[in-house]
Image (cartoon, rainbow, N blue to C red; front, side):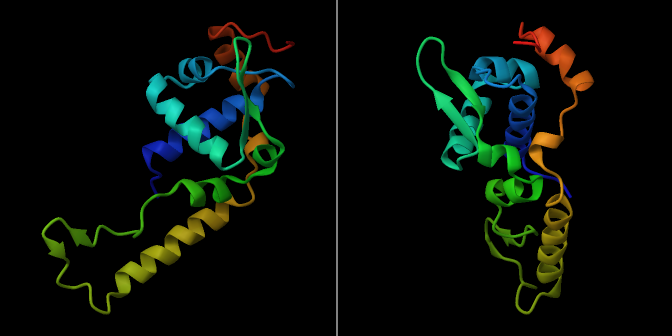
Length: 149
C-alpha cells in the first residue's frame, strides 16, 4: 500500500525529531534539510503535526520543534490514519461522475478492509523506536547538530 506524500514527509519529520538529542529543538529548515524535502512541504507537515499534538513548538530566535510525549508514544498506524486524507481506498469517483459499477461494489469494501489491515499492522510500530543512531548520525552531521547536544 502506498501512503500519500504528505504522510511520508510527516513521518520522516517525526523520525528526525525522535532521533534528536533530548531537549534539542530543531528548526523546520533543519528538518527540511534532513529529509531532503522543500521547506514549504515540511512547514505544512509541521503545522499539521502540531495540531495533532505530536510535536511541541517553541517560538523565537532560539526556538524550534521537538517531539511531544504524545508523539513519542504514537504508533505509525495511528499517525497514518490521522494523515490519510483519502476518503476512499479506490479511485471510484471520476471527475465526470461516479463509476458506473459503484452500486453494491464489493471491491471498495475489500480495499477499505485492506487499508485498515495495513494500518493495524503498523499500530505496533512506535515512532520513537524507528530511527537508529547509526542511521541518523550522518543526517545530524549534515545539518550541524552534534548527537551529544
